[in-house]
Image (cartoon, rainbow, N blue to C red; front, side, top):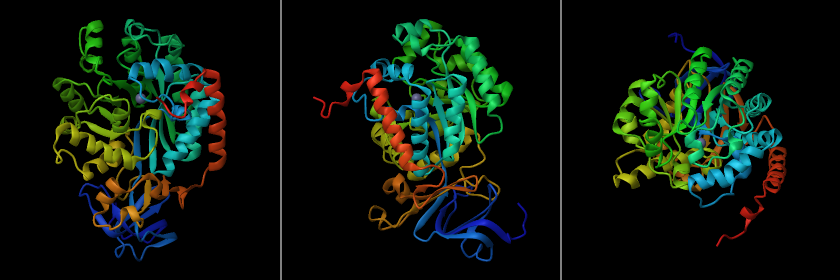
Length: 466
Ligand SMILES: [Zn+2]
């Protein structure tokens, strides 16, 4: 950054409470953020930037200006089933509900769901996403999903779910055969082609062995090699269910994260979702290698999975971000995830000091960007201009004493006024500027009706469960 004061910019957000999450964790109130092209060109107090000429100036008085949120683990295709499959254990939830959907959902239905999910995400302040897409995963569907996310305005990656041949663990868990549609070689070929087709785009593609516990070890090795060769991240579910620490050693002689570590597969763009059931040694290896971990508190609560060792993972140096985990998170609202991320830890430890609003806010922004490997997540000159404006002049955020506390404990996704991704305004006055919201919702509802009928899931629509 030059020492010359900025003379002009494209967009100036001024007068708001600017939560930078920068190295000094400055909160500037009133502050200002200048954007030029796709980058932030200056951040300072409103006074410091008062002489900057801007093509467009937006008065953010009464609002918070914050880094865009990073969603570290999602399955946008699942939102078409939102509200179904209540009160089930993980394996029946997957085997009797999510997988029958996953093995029959069409490309058109999946894309309608992804477009709806991406719209909801961006309207509640998410600017970047890892969408772990696993149905359907043919080349054209994978590309269509990436197109839909980009069309709505987000950045990030479609982590293409790969399963290869069914393993003994998969058979033991009674996994649907339809979840294993391709051979290992086919999985690699499709993923390679999808990554190459999306190279350099705002939404790329990553390899994603679906779950370390039940996919072939050779598939995991090959997927990571592909990611390293093509310079992408990679993604997987891991240590999500309480039986995983028993199941994996029974079949392979060691715990899953220990196996990844022994194979040299941790770090280097590795991003693992859930990671609830870890030994002390595994926590240390994840931290030492700079592996990313996606913490999905609402999903962990909804399915009753367990409580991730947030404090230990953070202390080990792990990049921990927050995620929704598809339909099991129901509403995409990073404010809710931040709040639950803390409250869950407090209930587990009976210790109200175990985590803070500041930590939750960093997980949703700065740490999420570190996890995803994107040059955003903080408001600082030179960073990508992924910026969100939140209206705090609402009854539920009044009185307003501390901006971070108001954001984490009181605000909600519907309070987002404006979402900017790479300098482009994709939500303004709470409305998408990129897609027709009513049309996206109508399309998703029609496709949802069609899917429920075809999968025979009408029984899950009972108005009152007894
Ligand atoms: Zn998941």
